[in-house]
Length: 455
Image 1 (cartoon, rainbow, N blue to C red):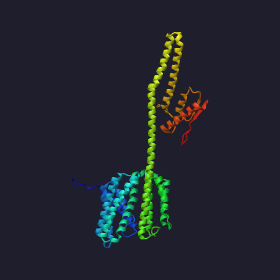
Image 2 (image 1 turned 135 degrees about the horizontal axis):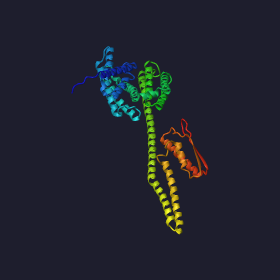
Image 3 (image 1 turned 30 degrees about the horizontal axis):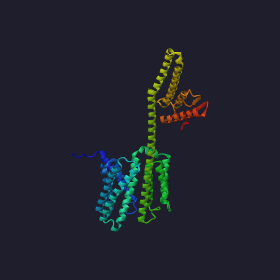
Image 4 (image 1 turned 180 degrees about the vertical axis):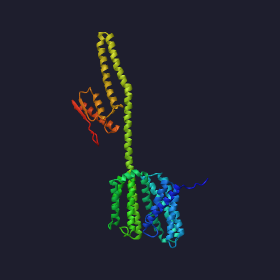
């Protein structure tokens, strides 16, 4: 099989991805609390998101970014541990590639993290892949003499939590915003969206800069983001909270900085992880609830449409069978009456004529009821609007001793066919109750339409 040279576009994509990865790594290096490990490592989330969205074939971009990061480390170090750097690069490469592969297997392609099982799948993939990097990196650092034996446990924990925090901040942010970017921007670029972002920034700053234990202040804003805007706003708010919290602490101020160095790193990482996981799951559950409500409404709509269609089918069958049979009964009764008058004797014609007349009247009454029934249930029940349909229904009540008046706009109302059918049924039942129980001589049906409702 002949080798294919990469295109200019592919080379450009690799370079852009490598530079972006290097930039994220530089950001993580500025957020170090110790000389060796960062409190959060953003390149993990960026790399996994890039390979998840665009495909594993873009791994050379991650390799290039790692080369730039580790090359800088080798240039800056007086006695660079080359073996440790190579092991670190291998672990980070495996972390990103395995993470993207696991993510596709667990939650499928193009996931928007709008369900709890997707968030759980992402958490499982991130947990497994960051453990690989932390283990390989810790072993390589120990082998290179960078870390002592008594520091292995705390070093591995800090590496694991830093990579996990970076993945759970950057990865969900990218996944939720690339799922439907236009809709997300339209939703967030509103007064409420801008206010939310401002509140998150202010509350996160107050929480981390205050001498009092006020770190919980950011959670109301995260809850607001989950209930009002969904996963994209949740991930953005969490990223702002994490950036302010870790940035302020790295600047050697704030509530977390006052703790001992080991507790400082652990407390910051746990705070970011708890905020991220809580808001991610809450946003996913709210999105699932909204989707369920929408699906239930759609199911009810289809059920109503099916019921209306079934009523129309029954009306058509009644029109083609029972209504025609009643019409034939009336017609034959009239013919029989005429034949009886012409041929029967006077002695028998009186009683037979009376019986035939009774049959004819009963058939006419049944035919009238059948017409009304077919009109109410048939395809012409609503027709050109609610008010005209009610007027036609009132006209079919000519035999009832009630003067009924219908008032309202003659043009079609801004309603769905299902809503008009339901309102028509309400008006029909109300008129039936008036005729049976009110003992009224007049009745009025008034339909008023406003911008928001119909009365």
